[in-house]
Image (cartoon, rainbow over all chains, first blue to last red; front, side):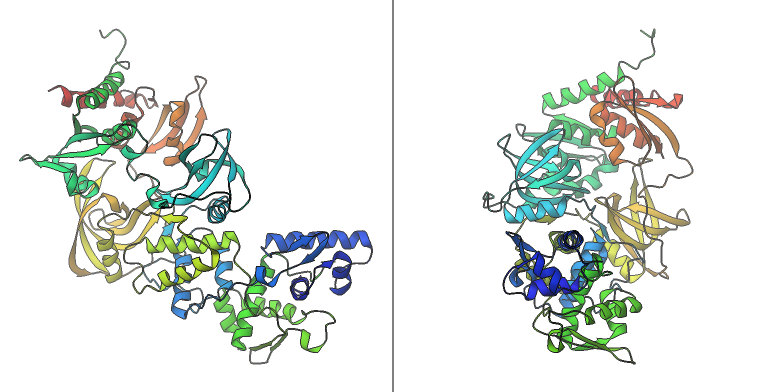
Amino acid sequence: MTNLVTFLLHTRQAVSLQEVVEQVPGYPAGLAARRQAFERDKRVLREEGVPLSEEKGRYRIRPEDYYLPELDLTPEERVALNVAVAAVAVSPEQGRTALRKLGGSELGGRLADGALPLGAQLVDLRALPSLPVLHAAARDRAVVDFGYRGQRRRVEPYGLLFRGGRWYLAGRDLGRDDRRNFRVDRIEGAVEVGEAGAFEPPASFEPADSLARQPWLVGGEEAMTAVVAVDGVLAGKLASELGEEAVRERRADGSTVFAFAITNRAGFRAWLLGLRHHAEVVAPAELRAEVVAWLESMSGPTAPPGSE
Amino acid sequence: MSAGKGDHGPRLTRLLAMVPWLLSEGGAPVSEIAARFGIEEADVIGDLELVGLCGVPPYGGGDLIDIIVDEDGWVSAFAGPFFTRPMRLTPAEGFAVLAAGRALLAVPGAEQEGALRRALAKLEAVVGESATLAVDLEPPPVLAAVREGIAGHERLEVDYYSAWRDEFTQRRIDPLVAYSLAGRWYVDAHCHRTGGLRRFRIDRIQSVRPTGERFEHRQVAPPGEAFTPGPDARTVTVALPSWAGWVAEAYPVRAVDERPDGRIQVVLDVAGPAWLERLLLRLGPEAEVVEPDDLEGLAADAASRLLARYRD
């Protein structure tokens, strides 16, 4: 197989199957057997990412497609990449292969950060098979096509974002003609990739800005300012999470009143109720009424029968 | 038999990475090659023997890659005009390294000298990446202080909010290792309050005070499941509306079933009533506890308690 790569890489012109099997040792006798063996080798090469070009039944590996351009990594930079791959669980096997191509590691597989236990990672990013495909498509500006919630979606992929333990694809849904975020773990089956250079992403696009951090900002409802009173027991923790700019009033009893913009009421309600009896929405009145109605629907129906 | 049996798949990729490095160095001991590429010494020899047979037709003299392993385990390599550089990264390989690098950059204090940032910039230039990949690890405010405690083996005093029990406690902990798992930061620490190894969510630590006391560092087992039910945990069966399937993804559940009425039924371990209340309040009237009996009224009681706050 290494001979085959060497031969195809060294040839100045594309070669035919006949030339390959005659010049590269190890192929069997008989046309059918040779063809079958070569087909299998082609498949292995492609699986391993060897850029085999095929045109009218002739083959070659173009050196410009094959060789990694000079990266000029210093030993410190190579070590830093090795530490990153060791410390972050994405896809260990692919990471290791990439590092070998980049010249291996002076560390010899040992980790610089002594704080890490053996075999444990500092960060666990869940690897999903469609991530590299989507990443390459975003880079090449190729439209992707995939199943999502039982429907086919055609999407201009702008970028990938890992947040809250999940991978999101940000892009433009062509069928709905709108900016959308998709959870990559919910993509059904394989992702199909179209031609490169099919679209221009928005000039100002940043994957990190494509998705709201807080549940009450996910979505595009009309913005309103929620005012929430929080008991002293949780006020300090929330002040550090929401930021000082959200603090409206610190009361003598230790409680704190926060005010901040929301654009997703359901997300806000879920967050608020997670604080249980330690928090209360004060204003606006319609938001307060919504929360009260939700609680009433919960306290009502489960009352024992005949208690009225 | 096809060309070069035995170097299929991963072995081929490994070979094609090793040879350019060897060529650029001119030679290296087997032990160094094994360490650098993370493989056994015996496999290094096996791989190299295969390469030694490679070349381009007509397979004479100077067209072969010449690899000689001497008796002291020193490998010398000479070659013709090919394999001078490694193969390009596949999309999966490029993604693996970039994502790992971006993630480590997102950890406060993990990258000090800028080598990783420079290495990533070089790599991005080569793979053509430009702002299509972001990793946000949402580091909690006290993460840096916790990591300093780990690095300096310093005992810390923390105010920790236990959401399971809905209470703040002050504890002294010996922090051993911190990590981000499924989007959340944890620290495994010896807890002096309970006298054992405990896992804490760092976003629930409100404040950290270094005590100035040192502790002896220990190796801890790699983190497994983020939640291990304690001795007081109870097993609860909850019926959920069909839109609340995320519950089964977000929490470690023992079983998931579909009910005849179209709702989803999950069985999970609950360490304290506060946590279960929180879940039920968020799910609303369509969710209910099926078992055990004494928790069936939990959601309605919690809702009434909250309503009282709105009515006074």
